[in-house]
Image (cartoon, rainbow, N blue to C red; front, side, top):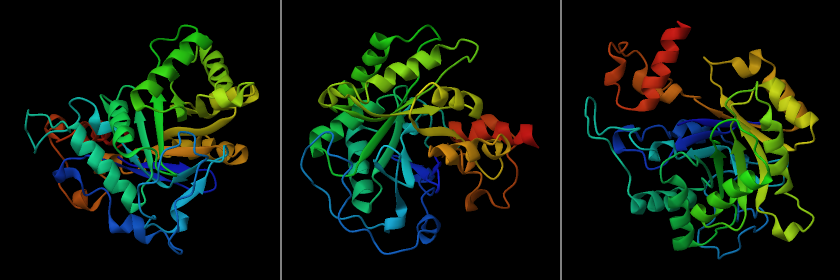
Length: 314
């Protein structure tokens, strides 16, 4: 699953714990495009959660990382945990037997990825047991320097999100991931006609820099699925948006067409882009291949989703 982070630069993401038949998303091409000397010791992002250093120096070049507006350091190639959701992958084409990773497999995969230098993970409260697996990782390996787990919050409905509701959501994620302070909280909203998203973001902002900074439970406020007009509305209301997640690829150019990229660059908001490889369609595996005739027979949910998009776009 690809994710790009932009601002002045861009970032992509790969799905961890992917079945072997779909594990070809992370290629040498991604690494060859990153030039420069290898980074030395992992860069600290402030030691929000303490813990011991248990991993070796990164094997990626310094250009593989960038600083966000809140001072945290992210890897330009982020690792997505979407496929830890129930029933997102199958074991082979046409199979009704859904693949589900075990906690041991996921934690092992996280450690291996971090050992290679891929230190930024992207997940959500609705991605099955993803946040619980992060908690298991912390229990096993502590809190290595420079590692970030950025989770999305998909609230239930569009009712007012007062400080109690927002704090409960943050505390639930903290408990599941066993973190004293979350990294980025990427907030989603269902219906812009119900403008409670402004209150939600304002309340989240209070958890970033409260009067007693030591009690801060959140490192930064981000959004997912917001368009330019509504990101601007949040900024105009005093919200310090660190990043905005959106669909962005050479096929889906809406962030450019709608001036989202220009606005985010002007505001120093990082762009976290998913769907950059359209679930794998923009890869060597599908180059010159015959068009699928039956969407339902595609082996995972991402291919099925983006095939529908490709058909719609022509």
